[in-house]
Length: 134
Image 1: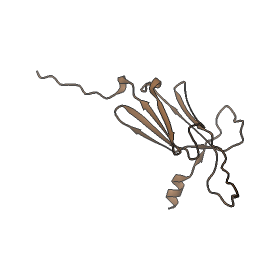
Image 2: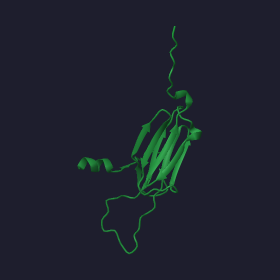
Image 3: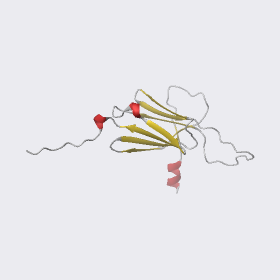
Image 4: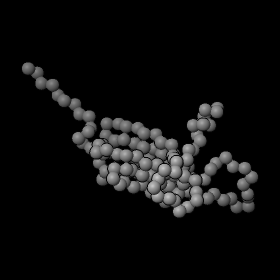
């Protein structure tokens, strides 16, 4: 059980960037799953509390950056006595090589999970080479 809880804990982004944030707010590194098939690479990022309006995905100098701002949670007629869930923003970056078609990258957000599809370039797709008799 302790191992499961450890896997679910969010980690904070180390403060190694050159630019400083203008908001005094915790930034989490979203946990991701990366899957691959013959045509695409898929990235699934867990960002609870984020919605499609607060997510920004950019691609600059071969770096795919995911950022999300999450609004504060408030409850009418209630006050929080105890909370184990931390509210904060998200940030994660990936370096891409020339193996992907940048103009065809797609993304969608549903139920706190960001899905990104990175189509592979034709030059890197696996292809079968026919064997000729003789």
